[in-house]
Image 1: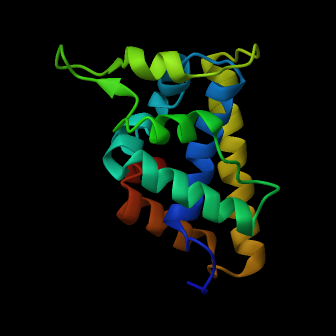
Image 2: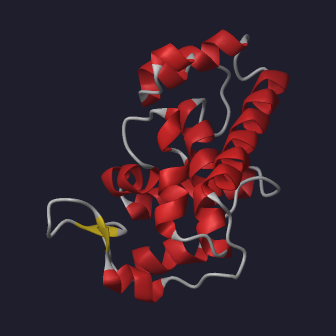
Length: 163
């Protein structure tokens, strides 16, 4: 790949995660945003992935890509609040299953735009498609199949769905 901010997987995942955070910030409930992308067959939900990566790292990457591409990459004030509060993620696992942490829920400042699962999924996929198109135009990779390979092998996107 061409030397570019975030290379392939991190650039696409950050755009993907940024749209999830945007819809949450705008007012869509966390549960709806998470459930919206389940049909994509990803290895884990976006906020569980954020927990694995670490909210502070996710915030740092968002800030870095926002500086490189401010028209497309946002920095979530809610994510910044989670990091500032020292939270390790959005969930607690007291019952064994992920449940929105009440302390995180209290930190969230949301607007009043509530999207459906389908609207959320469409918005996230549109953002990912746009970013992939731009990466191809910029010559970050030579062909779309290169991005598919990166997403399948580097991010665990389902092979049977083509990356």
